[in-house]
Length: 394
Ligand SMILES: *Cc1c(COP(=O)(O)O)cnc(C)c1O
Image (tube, rainbow, N blue to C red; front, side, top):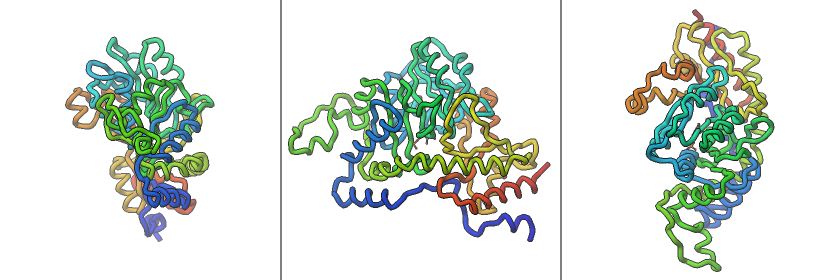
């Protein structure tokens, strides 16, 4: 047998797969059979459960984290003429919503080792028009919140945390969501817990809670399910023009049984990530993920080594193709946002304007990491990665 044959699986292994159990399925069926499918009591219970888990006083359930970031900016009064500082190493939604509210995204480069936004880069980009900072807790490690909150206090800026990767993440012993900001979690199927699609905005600001509650559902001043309650009045007011961004009970039904499993999911991810780190320690072909230098609990949303282009004769895209040939899926999280045509053309950004993000953008890949990944499957990934590194060594 050649090395290639040893590394070959006979079925394709995706880089991510949600863990949906019988309880989620039973709760979902209960919602469907009850006739109450849209926003209702399960959304209320799920919102309260997330608020309690993360340690936030207010939570608003939404159709996605993108919706959450959008209404967060609006509820904080950010719009035309304002600048919002964020990281180029994020999913495009973070920047898109800044543009969609009429504000201007301003980028602060990352640390290429931890992949997190650099506080001194944020500080350097603050102008009289800066209104907000959106740190992204990248792949499940926290951004350095204390100095970011300190900068925000000194310059009177809003902090909206893009916590799409970070439910269960801790910064200096406290969960993301517990800090005095607005934070947004994602429940997309690839994220650490899922509701199919969905998001949760949590905030410590009562006025932001009230505005986001209106903005998520047409600007209507009460929840739809209360309107049909026998005791309630059928009348409602439109307080402002809002969106249709509400989470459904059939989504919350899944989330209600995902949340109690989150800590177990993270423990499984942690074990798998540790096994990858150990298995790849001696490989020149990969640059392994590094931990942030402050106390943190890593939620291991993704396992993202960098392809060491100095040690290999192939690009990252070719590396991913070679893995696919070996029936191993991998993901690209992410191409740095400043390199997409809209952002490049609109803001005139060059790849090297943010050299660390550009470096990472050319090299990063996500290897399979999900709670149900078996050690045999992980062994296949490790064998395939080692095989590719050996075959294409410089
Ligand atoms: C997934 C993701 C989002 C968007 O989440 P959705 O729930 O899919 O809208 C935003 N920011 C980051 C960093 C993400 O990874």
